[in-house]
Image (tube, rainbow, N blue to C red; front, side):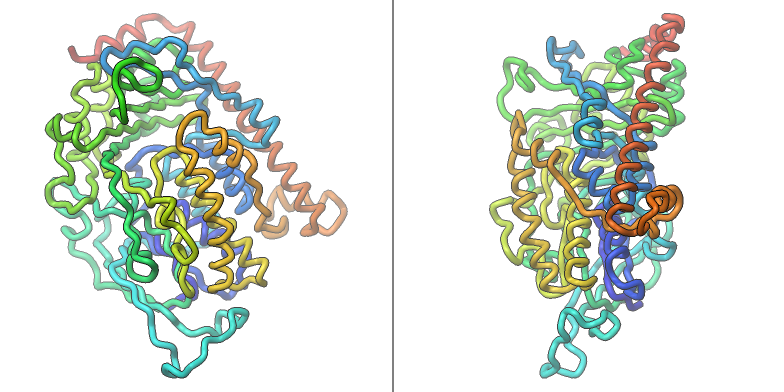
Length: 546
């Protein structure tokens, strides 16, 4: 296979890079996304999108931003509980002012399933751009056509005239092998039966010749290891478990059914279904007693109309997990992760100290929706010129700047993609060393600003997130539909600045209407649930084992 631009990794960063670059590169440039998993599945948890990520998504397509606001849910408050007995910590509630955010910023935060984010971006791409079931196993630079004396063409040369510079080799597992577990950093994932990708006999390897490589292949990026500085992320010592609940389980919980036993913090409290909940040990988040980094559980079961979003994640230091009988790395894996029954079983073992009602909820998670992985990060002080790009290769997202799961990983990866396309457009729709170097110089200081402010009250980080601005990559005529009609109603050039601004104004109005409607639906749901018999809450509690 041959293509012009090969994007390795079909997560939010890789898909956003493809969608963004398609709008600024000439239409004859062949862009391909190679995704290791054989399909989009439902493993993993959720992603918290903030103002910066939603503005970047809107710069790719207003329709994509609207789609995520429709699919996502809105936490109105974060509550903290003791993980020993489930008691709520007095005064711990932190509210989220969605109405105020919309008024001041034009956007607000939204929680969505990991794969819903991937799907709204993938919908911006034509069929055939994403190649599933392609796990990168090797990369090499090709000699220039014409021999060692051949001169590189100028960066401005049409892509069709440029030589093939790289060959990528992809292993192709059989259909059904692998998983799509969210931000697990490109690790190998294993089940009880061994390596999932290696266990299933696959098709012959796929060799791809390309002219430009964009690596969006997670924090164990093979593109970085073999074509760039080779810098490996460092293990932080933290283990992560992630899981989610499908809509039918959420609906059963809402009706007091048998599918999802709600913990005491949520049972019989309709308002709790619009809140985020976290359980922490003594000493954490203002509780007296325990120093350092501690295990914790974060749970979000949000339901304000639509299908809702139900996700959880847990984290624990590896020595503490070992003391609970959970060793790292898992048997059969050299630092990789797990998914399925093995991951769920290990997570429940590590968190055996949780109250019974929480363990009952976690135990009701369908195994195919659970992942486990170690947390790896790239040190910010080791990122400098040439860390993220060399020649016609660049990396973005976790491959470039893996960080703790603090809500900015996916947001910054979409930013990376939008800024890359913006720089490429500035240079006349080309992609090469000058564009990559300029992009890297723009991105590294911003990433350090946001990820470097890692302790409360996050004043620097919050200001940088809220100040994010991006040039729209689209023109109204490209968007079509209602956006193009709104621009045309201006009576001026549809694709001129006036048309673009009209579409942006229209888009912010649509966003406000979506969020206000979803919050109004929640108020109706709360009223209906408050009038329901108290036996619903009692029945939910009765299902919790002793």
